[in-house]
Length: 344
Image (cartoon, rainbow, N blue to C red; front, side, top):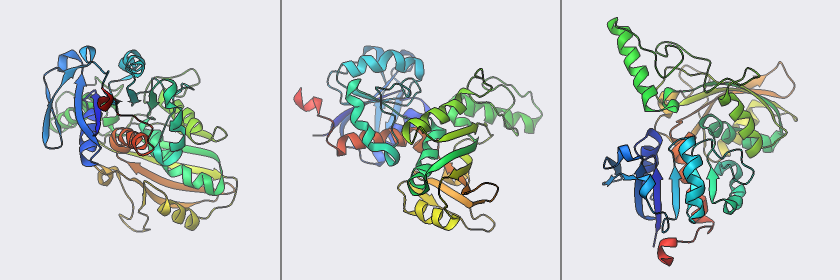
């Protein structure tokens, strides 16, 4: 007997990716249900070689559902995740709604899988921000080896992180540039085609954006509260795949060669680092892949025990859908989940 899994937000970019990954990884599900808002009711989405008809979230009964993968935005999650959890179904939430709740584990399985044991307080587990997920996968093994003091990161984040409308805006603006048409700005604060925008999420009082704050708070929660981190989050005209330029200062000496060996041996990471033309990974190559790719590992001689590296990952997969499914796999593999459908 497998599990009964519901995917909320099944018609969105991440929801569709969740369905694909559940099928790809042969997650032990007897039944998968696609859920979304009433306006999407009756739409069809693919799950492996099957077609699922989307049902409405607000009329669905979770009493015999084991796992809910939630990717419908923060407001929907705030309203529904606690209700679903109270019905005994474990919610793995992809929004920011519960990431900073001390009673909700924030999990990247390669980084802090043991923290998942605390999920039973609310039956909710949080998935981190896409830019944080790939970063902590890379930082974790280095932190264990030489203890990280400080991180400076600049992100190069694709438009898919802002949803389907954002992807459409990049496409439409690019076409308008080539046809000398009107470039309409709707989703972003400035034109994104052939441009970069140093602004993701809302501005905070200290001048940082919420996206930058998320990276700080989430890294501290998952990896180590002592780590100092500062970020500049930038949107770039790429459809899928986030890249990050990362500068790390360690307490103990670590050479680029040592860091390379450590990263090669770490779970979820592929090192592609040839010091030649094309000997690195870009978002184009990372799209559709599960790994977090590390390239351009080198010494930062301006500080004691400093390294630089380049980090790239598919934000819809490791940054969202894949990580969510991996969390569900941890629940199953550690025997933390009882099959409610069997009991019913």
